[in-house]
Length: 203
Image (cartoon, rainbow, N blue to C red; front, side, top):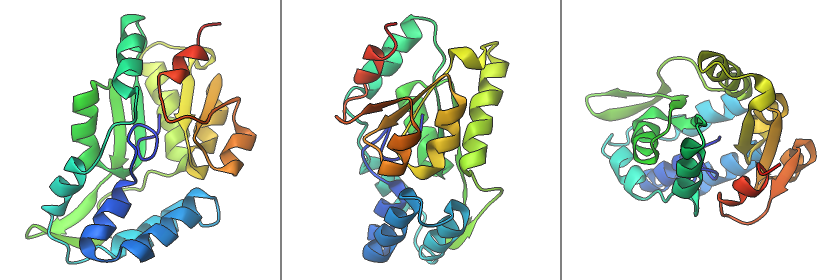
């Protein structure tokens, strides 16, 4: 599944933008990106650039300002009891996603990394960017590593960069998603409760 606005309620980069005093600019770029109006990699670089000079301690504040979506723990626990593996791939950042993944007991996770120097964000990313193609690749790679056919996979997300992942899975679920995502998904959930995913798996 996706992380921001799916596993958690917030967009982490918007939280960081607010802490940096560039919240309005950040939110505007995020909204256009998630609606599919901007290329994700380019817009991510633009948004991260706005964070230049922000103290790295803001990442801790952003983590503590995040809230797991209703039903997240219940969904993951139910899937684990049935022998499923659960992963999250995020356009957000390992600096917060690692802690979210640990709290949620995820089996796999992947995210971007922020570059920092002397405990200050440089406004740049470290390493390659998690793109829409990376998300689809992660589903395929994790399924293969767990010995699971793609015919037995499910993907959940809300943004345009989740579309390839949703389309590659046997069941792609648009979760409180943008119109472009809803049109490409196999199923839609419009209530912010991840337990509703279980209802789509009963067949």
